[in-house]
Image 1: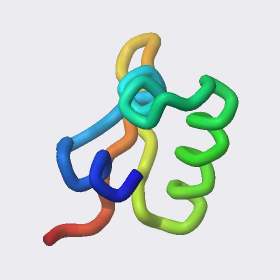
Image 2: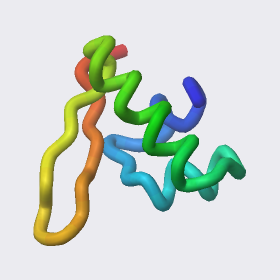
Image 3: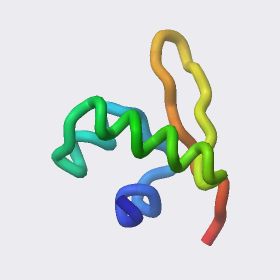
Image 4: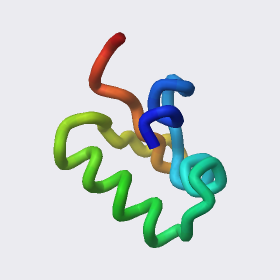
Length: 57
């Protein structure tokens, strides 16, 4: 999960679950938890929701 977040400028549910080989429900749960804890923010772009990092390295 950490490697995925550091590898991309943003992610979306589909990319996240494919990279981690997890279900859609699990990916949604993880992304919402990461957002709640302040690591990422969500933004609606058209019909999709993208998640952007809140931290820099």
